[in-house]
Each structure stands twice: as structure tokens, then as C-alpha cells.
Length: 107
Image (cartoon, rainbow, N blue to C red):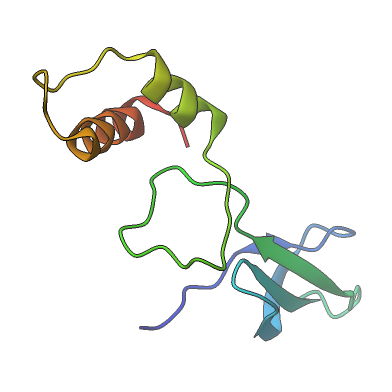
């Protein structure tokens, strides 16, 4: 799968910048070197892209990765009444609440 590049403007002249190099620093952090496309500016700078919180839990979680649940998602899940029938599987209730929270919570 080909990664799409992140658009970033030069912080000095606001011209578009291009990624010159990118490296995965950890499971949740990528470091990218950008270069300004304005030849007169020529600024080269580093950008960090970091996963900071979970909006929808992974179906295949990595036990070595911890990303906190978004506060909006957590609130939406804990404030909703149970939607399962009494005696239903707890996992079903949680999955249904998370699905509803994803629809309701802004990115």
C-alpha cells in the first residue's frame, strides 16, 4: 500500500513543502524532513507525525502500543445506557456503544 504524503507549508514563507525523507521512529511516531519549494527561502525542517489517541479500538491490538481512548469517545460510551438484553455478552454491549460513539464523536 502506498502512503499518501502530508501537505505542509513552510513555516517561514508559507510556500508548499515536499517530503525529502521519512522514517518510522516508533509504532506511533514518524519523523519527516520537509523542504520548502520556494528556492529563495530554501528552508528545510523536521515534522513529527504522532498517533495520540484512539477513536475506535483496534480489532487486532498490539500489546506493546498504548493509545488512550479519546475523552469524547469515553464519555459517549460511559453515558449511554446498556443496549443489550439482560444477560447479554458484555463485549457485544461495549462494541455496540463504541460503534455509536464513533458516529457521534467528532474527529
